[in-house]
Image 1 (tube, rainbow, N blue to C red):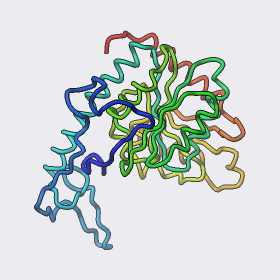
Image 2: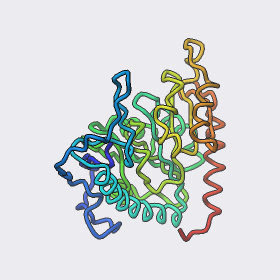
Image 3: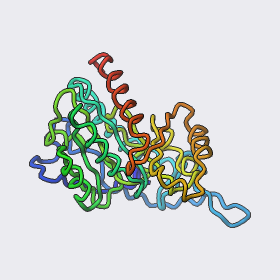
Image 4: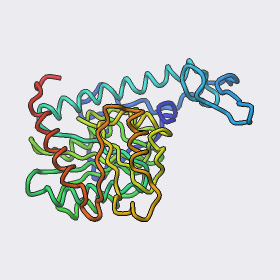
Length: 293
């Protein structure tokens, strides 16, 4: 769990600034130093009768070799409190500029980039859309976004498995999104770590495809609990699969009863108008909120 591993470095494609120069805080960003704590806590996981190990036990709800439960919580708080401070700065910027920011999260292969490409292509005459792309190593997705005519800034996280608010703050300096525009943040493909990191976005949007299991919301509840909208993508494949849409949505609502859901196909366009309606209505609601945050 990266809230305690301090993972990643984050070169931003074409970035010209030194770390910590964008005015989001007094130092160089989230504490990615590795914390070495010697002392094995043998009681932070539970062995069941069938031999399986359940690492959810303990006050931290996670097991990290060499760290006590108390130390895990301390490190998580240190990292997340710094991230939240940067996220507050980002959110203030978005609200002041009237930028509607959405954080798209998913597992790898959900069709997230295809969804964004189609959305930008079909909405670009109605609204200005910019993109911050998160990926561990390549700029492939940013290149696909730019082919639509939209501007995109790539953040490569190296071994890091998520974007954080400090990275996004630096990317905003380079991107400088237009007032009144929409900003899509495509997070690194991972249904675990991005749930914990607020980027200052208006909403987290979790993209799930019908080629995945209906029980994904139950397996990764933190992500579905943090999201406001679940997009079930690749609906055109349903006739060829045993995927139970009703069961998937039911599982998601067990985790988050307030979660809104849409069924779409980024390939055929099925359901995309409903997504555009959700985007426009949500942007209007944000625009009517007070500017002070």
